[in-house]
Amino acid sequence: MRDYLLTLCVTAAVTYLLTGPVRKFAIATGAMPEIRARDVHREPTPRLGGIAMFFGLCAGLLVADHLQNLNSVFELSNEPRALLSGAALIWIIGVLDDKFEIDALIKLGGQMIAAGVMVMQGLTILWIPVPGVGTVSLTSWQGTLLTVALVVITINAVNFVDGLDGLAAGMVCIAAAAFFLYAYRIWFSYGIEAAAPASLFTAILMGMCLGFLPHNMHPARIFMGDSGSMLIGLVLAAAAISVTGQVDPDALKIFEGSTREATHAALPVFIPLLLPLTIIAIPVADLVLAIVRRTWNGQSPFAADRGHLHHRLLEIGHSHSRAVLIMYFWSALIAFGVVAYSVHSASMWIVMLVVALSAVGLVLLLLPRFTPRAPRWAEAFVPPRYRRRAVQPHLAESSPGHDAQDGPAVSGGADFEAAAESEERTPIPAGVNGATAIGARSHLPDRRKAGTRG
Image 1: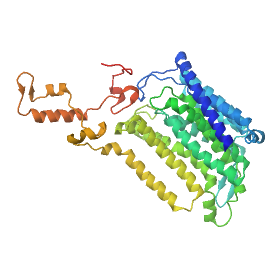
Image 2: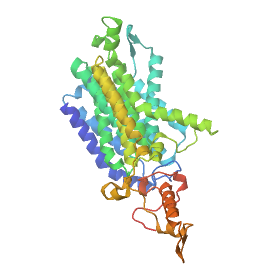
Image 3: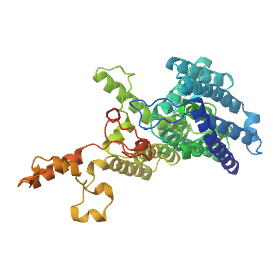
Image 4: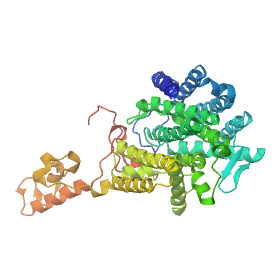
């Protein structure tokens, strides 16, 4: 564990220290695309954050290769080299896309080639555990197709969820932490050396995300871009493939006893297949809803819009940071809930705890809909978000019941209150860097920079 923590810290430190120079490089090379209608940020932000993350990956693998307890991973397995080869290829494609906006089909082809490179070097799914049957061996082409499909789906899921500052990096870090606990338990408790590469990959992945997050949290100073989102998606998929396709379920002695006992005992083996879904579940749900929504409105399924889940969280009334934290909460609940259930599958306390936390998550999700308004006499004692908005002077002057020369009429009080309610219902334009996004982005022409007035 000490060596894993050292590898994680080195990866995080290298990624963190290189992100600043990479940001300056991105600005100098013009890797700052124009703001699109569906974007949440308000100012052009440099991309290419994946450059720092890739060098963090290289540093983590280099350090692990020189540690006594982790050196055996490189001697007994070719998976670290396979990961580095596929990561280098997908990283180059991502860098080119961040700079030149290459075609989507070219990126898809590059993702498949990167997965094929890893398969050629031995990082592939060899068998699938089936309860009551045992280990089902896959043919060469079946393992290749399944591996390529898992890599492509995971990469695009991570890329799809990268819509808010710090969202993708945080969600992948949470999934990697849960995955590390599972893989380390298989390696340490059962003594299966084949789980060591997956433990190493997830530790390095956590370091990459933790080192980049301080620069990417709202308001983000740099985006990871496709060079970063596709990279961390590939590393997450590689860890899942390693522990799923390389660890022999028969070594765990799970397929013994009755069918029900075998099914409960087989849960730890299926966790690698389920954990990638913890990062894919939310993006895939968003993808399906987007296709249905656009088709229903007579638009192309590939037409960009502002109807994604994170956009809806902002429109409900959540701030940028709170929307990200809510999605962190759901990712952690699913990931760690699955891992905890795999350890104690017969305990109902885990199920009850997950259900209770899900109820808490739903309350937090709908909290802006039930935001109370304090009475006027108590406004001085509550936070600003619970206060009634003050009426602007120009509204009072333009109210129908008010005469600028002769003074207020008899009905001025009622009109004054109506103007106040109208002002309260008026959407507030998003502030600098999208701190508050309530109205539609395309309807807000105000593009002032931070610190400007008027």
